[in-house]
Length: 91
Image 1 (cartoon, rainbow, N blue to C red):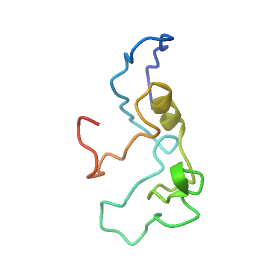
Image 2 (image 1 turned 45 degrees about the vertical axis):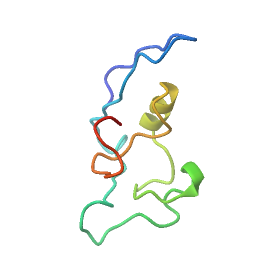
Image 3 (image 1 turned 120 degrees about the vertical axis):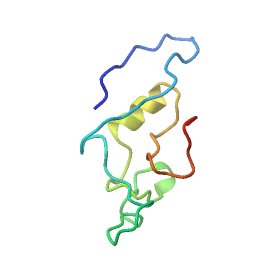
């Protein structure tokens, strides 16, 4: 659950350096690509409405509200999964 949403200033540089998401099922559709399990969601139709139509491992077909906030604040089109090895603390 996101608790704080400051209003961005028009024409100003980004004042929001990161979004940290503590969530429930409304902001966490799961991503188990990095853990050993038989239940996966890295195939279609999952991700059909995501960037490039690519399955992501999320149990949803597109972006979540937190992804739209991330893009709005200039941080990227989606919030990466915590365990994704392609991203580090600087992301």
